[in-house]
Image (cartoon, helix red, strand yellow):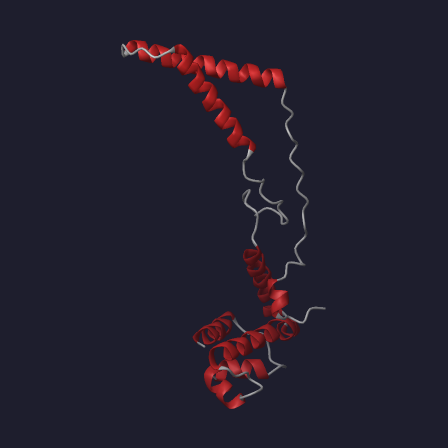
Length: 191
């Protein structure tokens, strides 16, 4: 059973973890790799020599070949020190695309579902939503004003406003409407 604290808000225990298959490493054939690079160097050399002859410029063929061999070696070295692969995805994919979901989005979706269910079930509202609202209110009061509802109830009530104060202290209350929840959030943001 959840106590509805901030840990529950930001935890991801409810979401199933999907395993992502390991990418299969491609095996390279060394002779094929050498042939491919040799053909690239020959093609680049032919195009460069043709362009230089068209411009009536003469450059040593050996210098052109050496340039392209050096270029291929530099590109090979850069590919060998490529950045490490991205970490494995721990979460499922977003509903409509191939982007992984992030923790904040998952927490917001979970709270949307909880609030939707809480409209119909006052017990769920009292068990899950009110304790988190109370914890958020105490945290905002502590951070912004150096008090909590327990340490200075009079000042806390004044800062929170009567609607939010009443909601936090009336545990047997019915579920809040969307407009009431919006008012509570505005009061918390105002702190």
